[in-house]
Image (cartoon, rainbow, N blue to C red; front, side, top):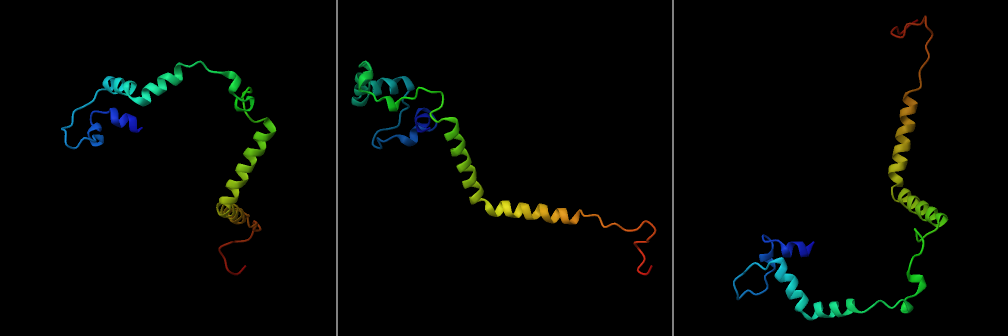
Length: 123
């Protein structure tokens, strides 16, 4: 993200380090050329030009399967994560269950005989 801001014409001025010299915009092409000429650019070019030696790598470091974990290990990891999230948010789970329970109590129909008048105090 910082590199995009440095390349932007509007934002580049705030990263200008030469306070004694007036600011001038540096284009992307000149920025690339200066980086390639710098010590870091030359070291990177030299390192990338060498062929990759597979004999020095470890077999453990490379993944030869689609997923690095088996299905059972993936299930255990996901269930542990879900349990941890449930423990963290236990107050919310308890509150929701209490809310559901109380709303179910309010829904219990009070059966009145059909001939009774619910609005009269004395029957």
